[in-house]
Each structure stands twice: as structure tokens, then as C-alpha cells.
Length: 59
Image (cartoon, rainbow, N blue to C red):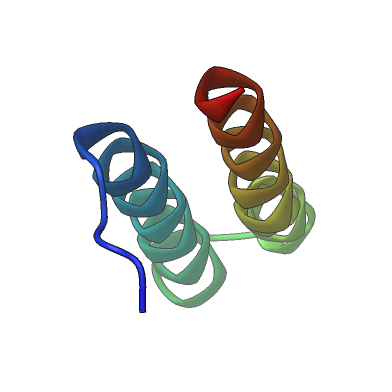
């Protein structure tokens, strides 16, 4: 298992915060189901972009 760099922690924590915001919108906001789905789509996007940038930085 590789050691996590500070950049890895940054995008993983950002994705987790996005997930928490999505869950909060879904359960606690009135009529915000579509917004919750939109924010939930950010999670794989953040992880994918972070992973791609991390590989680029390792080169």
C-alpha cells in the first residue's frame, strides 16, 4: 500500500465533504433532490481528477 501524500489527502477529504453535503441536501433540504444528485456526482469527478493530477505530478 502506498503512502498517502498531502495532495492525496486533500482530494480525498474534498470528495468526502462533497459526499456529506450531498447526503445533507438529500435528507434535510426541502425539494433539493436534484441538487443532492448533482453534488453527489462531484465525488467520482473529484477523485478522478485528483488521481489524474497525482499521476501527472509523479512523472
